[in-house]
Figure 1: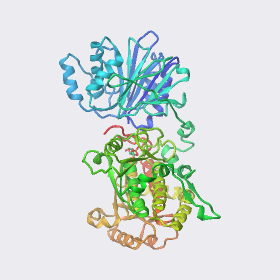
Figure 2: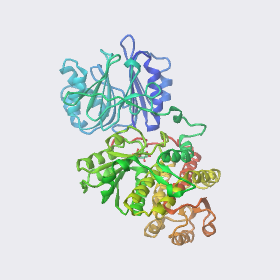
Figure 3: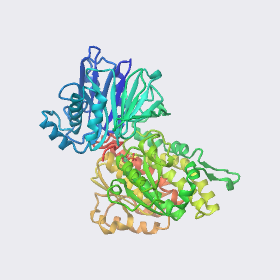
Figure 4: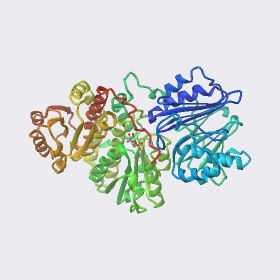
Length: 621
Ligand code: G6P
């Protein structure tokens, strides 16, 4: 979703801005633009529909000088992707230029009011309305930009992260945020400042960052401390944080796509995720244990919880469905899993001793953030399961567990999913043991088995070539069905989502037994059906479902436990996964489904890492 980069200081701004935009490409976008003020105080704005590389090409022989600038990748919400709708947007007076992430919900009304005041518009965006509104207050308030931004934002309903550039006074930038993330990097001795939607483009220059909070407006001037005010124009404290983001982890590392790299990263990611949390003593398994600081620090609140609500979106929601099964199994606590977007608007019942678990890779998903803000108002404990350190959800949560799988660049989530399931497993086992619902010997055995999962994922990855071969049979398909039961039901949903996201083939996940209540009507010789049919108590029932499909000539690909002979007799193709305990199975069965969707998308010649219309970080509703 839209990305912002800004720079002010003593260096040339253009290379920093372009590099920053490239590092934010993973968020997903459809147009890009840049505004710079040259040494002769001339404002240059360049925009393009399409990729950042086109912007770079188109500006090759143009004036790109200047030590201050703002840049943007746009993911269209109001108005089609086009040059005129791309950011930066300039006010009618030509004095203010702005980039914006988010949505101004009352833009239509504000636009009408501005038109009455004589303002005219070139684009169909909500963003142009905002820059004109700031301009209106700027002209009225003696051209004081920070004041004008503050006044304008008081009129706005919606979400925003903005950076504003003043043509006649290029010595500073004004930035503000509400519900859309914005980070300010503080250069050495405050000589320069870097602004971005997340810390990724900043860490190459500085580790010192300020995370703007909702309702904060920052005045950023080189060689001066950053000044922050709130919407009442009151001065606020500036908290400088240290970020530790490993830039080497942002490259493809020899793989053709980030997604494939991230699939292959999973054994190491899960080891990183469990490091310092899961302890296995092979000689004396009685010492096996899980240590989670969140559980120690909030033990009483967590042990008292009678009800847990998991809120999330997309892939994180699928991880939540697995979390529900884990927590109910091991802790005997009632768990509901909610789409954050529905939960936030339907006046849910939230008690003050409830625990809300928010699951989010980016930590910035607007709906998930709003859901926890609502739950906080009711006094519930907010527990974050987040990947992006220092993100809005991580900061809003009372406590939580980072999944620590490193930056995920591919838009289709892979390693974050297994990281989330891994953390939910740690939490369920540790909490169940504390509560006493998980007996000691089972707790220790489960820990030992969990520690083996990274090497078992490695074994599954060795079947990549076979999965690639199988994928070629399926590139023609227009519909897929994914079926699983128990712990494999959310995996079926996730497998279907992965395929949809990157190959644009319609796919649906279902609990296998529900097939006869509708989806079976679709089955014919054209229809591939993926069964997740590992050994567990419902295995025979799944085999019966497979027979039903086979008798209707459906093409079956089955994910089975190694050594399985029965399914092989029915399915057209099988992929084996190693034996493990049933509750750990999603960490293995999801891997071939990730690889399958990857290879189908590659075979169809699609942009795997940046699929059309999708965004990595969904910071608008
Ligand atoms: C977008 C991404 C998905 C992700 C979902 C939730 O749709 O493309 O991959 O699962 O947002 O994001 P979150 O960062 O909250 O996990």
